[in-house]
Amino acid sequence: MEQVRLGIIGVGNMGSGHLQNIEVKKLCPEIKVTAVADINPARLDWAKETAGEGLALFDNAEDMMDSGLIDAVLIAVPHYFHPVYAIKAFERKLHVMSEKPAGVYTRQVKEMNAAAEKAGVVFGMMFNQRTNHIYRKMKEIVESGELGAIRRTNWLITNWYRPQAYYDSGAWRATWSGEGGGVLLNQCPHNLDLWQWICGMPSKVDAHLQFGKWHDIEVEDDVTAFVEYPNGATGVFITTTGDAPGTNRFEIDFDGGKLVSENDKLYLWKNEMLEQEFSATNKVPFGCPKAEFSEVETDGRNEQHVGVLNAFAGKILHGTPLVAEGTEGINGLTISNAMHLSAWLGRAVELPFDDDLFYEELMKRVKTSRRKEDTGPVFADTSGTYNSK
Image (tube, rainbow, N blue to C red; front, side, top):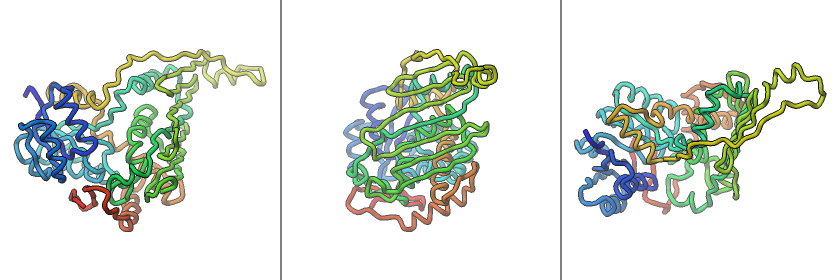
């Protein structure tokens, strides 16, 4: 095999971007999009015009997966259906690249991961922010141990502003039945993935979510969460789609200094000695460890979606590493689910939490979810079928 024959499930915002990167901009030389599937005929017409006559069109994903025209699928449909179609692809021994998030609830994602392991195919997650040179360097520094153990993490990520028109642009958006959540599940999967990828998984989550605070929506658009880590470190995660202008500042404090990512720069403060050592030996009441400040140099590479897809092809064709293994998608989702569950129950949640309890609480909200009218052709339910409205 010289090229991976790729079928795209869903050619909406994300799926259309991937199609253009591969077939128009020719940025993924080891991938050929040979088929697309979408329930909206207009999107199929657009895909044909964009990619040319050689593209096969399907009005449902199963027929595309059974066509023999593809080796792999890229899943770019509403969130509930990421695991649904991934499992269907695994059953057919097709390789899978899924858009984020991995799914809406961990119970479903665990089933997906088990199916991936059984199938023995390549499974990747579209965590394109892992290609960002700033975050790669942060992970490298954390893992080197040069600053000692992590004490505190803080991520203020409020530059996800969305106006009401954004939420009105699709029937599935910002509903429990269509999207399964708000800013945590739509905008922040990348941040939650990076947070745990760089700093590790927390052991306890205490979150305060506000639902429809800044918009006419039923899901969360304002979040403040406190977490504890197994080593005793703590963290805070704050996000919203209501701040304009917003801020993106990610700070990690260590025994021996701190890292700050802000405005596409990475800053490092390295103490001359660990805080514990200084505190034990210092005799000055208001003394403070001396710290050397520097702006950290990086390689500057930021390949984003194209980098993830090229690595996906490389794994299939040559056995080279993925940017993000698909089975890792459950980590950020676990944090997201824990934040929702903490807010719904009004108390802190230990990890791992009860997957069934989360599902029950989510389904209570799905049952009373609003059905938005006249806002677009796509609506997703939780029955395992991708429907048109």
